[in-house]
Image (cartoon, one colour):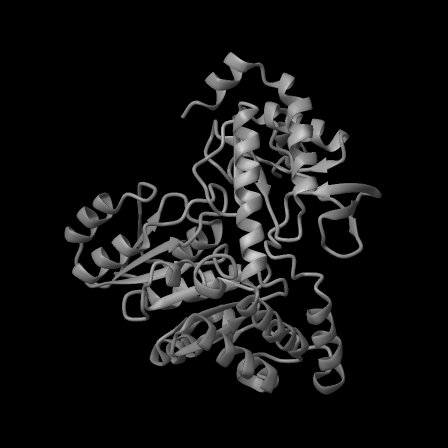
Length: 395
């Protein structure tokens, strides 16, 4: 029998062991985790809507009408009127013809990619795409080819030498680096080589683009240029679930073929009602996004002044590159001792030698709270001496 205990011990020795925190109370910057009050900078609740009173009211008010559970798959008797209204709302929000509601972002990527490509087809995937995209490529049984991160020229060369059905898939905003994919160039190359472009905008929806409509609309790209748009609802939208949006014929095709849509129980319909309320808030609240943008600028200026190595991100995801696993853990622990929660991200989530602290900012953070983070980073800077630190993070 495989020695599972030994493998766990090896992970501990390598600084790769992972643990869960027990959170009590709602998701918000001042968080109770493992019984301690911590100022959190590791949530994907970029707009602070996970605990917004209007969304909570929408959920509570919907329950008497919808009940609690989804009870069945969408194709049996689980497709509630609230799910249908959310799909219509998501299509309008993303300026697409139609949308399909999935239970999670992971399930959306698995289902969409494996439905749109199969044996004999080729999928081209950015090297830094999310694990759910990678797993979707594997599940499809298509040939999967990875291109260097954001390298449109390399992708174009690969597409030119490949025949048959071609699918290009990329994150819109990369979850561990915080940078935005070169979507305009990707759309141009896909058009030239008759490839279907799929964009997972999990970290762009709600934050980027006009009225928070995401990175695809920030780039001004139409449904014709980006036929398949995937997004999650558990990040900036603050609720739960995911969606894919695009031409109606593709949405119908996914209803027939996406196994993670067909063979799972529908999400609670009351959550769909709450998500519609959250989309209303997102569309109407440019000041919230403006405050978030100002926090990002403030944090970057302060962290760079302290000598920390930031990645070139203008999104709420602000990674601090450290390099070594143990050093990254030590820095995270030092911050926690000062009451600040920032998680250490280590391989295989990121490449070997590029462990980091993944700072994420929210519109409900205040400037004073960001200053608390910067002060904690200043107090912890001695853990990473200047010259040694700079050598460690060089990439």
